[in-house]
Structure formats: structure tokens, C-alpha cells
Length: 166
Image (tube, rainbow, N blue to C red; front, top):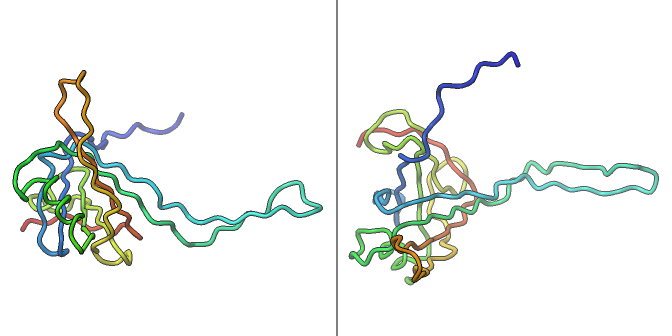
């Protein structure tokens, strides 16, 4: 094969997640979050067939579609200091926006230099983005697992920063 296998893999089990209603003050919700899923972010591509060609003409637009960020978390009924009440209250209010940031290696405010991915409206700064949904928990009587809920935001861009101690 000619390539050396990496030894720098990042475990998925110790990530950090925070949310903000103003882009300045952040609330850690990693004690409730069980998963963060990201989709979207594809370059818009155009294609067309011609009368004489066997293959399509395909062109990239250099424009990126928005990102869908879906966060699954343990459902609690603890005041606005935990994920469900914090996000749900924001979604039910008039300002249905939220900043979300996550660090695959954790340590957003306790370690210097870890990658942090942030919602962004410009790609050059952290931004509050629309909350698409904040669903109450689905229930399953045959499961002994804790109840979970999910919320989703739509971010025009993802802005990458490095963690720093606060």
C-alpha cells in the first residue's frame, strides 16, 4: 500500500457542544448532548446534456449550500440551564436564532488549540442562525433508555476557530 496508518484519530465520545443566544455568552450542553449530525454544505453543481455529446457538461458554481446541524440530547425538565428548556424557550420566542459550536476533541474553553466548528452567517465570524425545529421527546414504552429530543439549525457557513482558555 505504501502509506502509514494514522495514529492521530480523534475519539467521537468526548466532544464538547455549546449554544449561545447572543454569540458572546455560551452555555455548555455536552452533559446532555448524545450526537451532533451535520449535512449539507455541498457545492451547487449545474449539468446539461448536448445534442451531440455522450456525456453531460458539468460545472461547479463555487457556491456552497447551507449546513443542517442536528443536535440530539437527553431530555430534562431542569430550568433554562439545560439544553431542552434553553433551546425550546428560544424557539418558542420571537428570536428563533441560536449559535452552536462544537469541538470534536472537547475543551472549548479549557484547552488551547483544539478545532472548534461554529455556526456562521459569513464564514468569517461566529453567528446566530435560524432554529429550524426543537422537537419534544419521542417516547417508546419498550425502551429503558432516557428520553431524548432534537433540535436543528440551518447555518449558511461553518466557521472554524481554535479553542482557548477562558
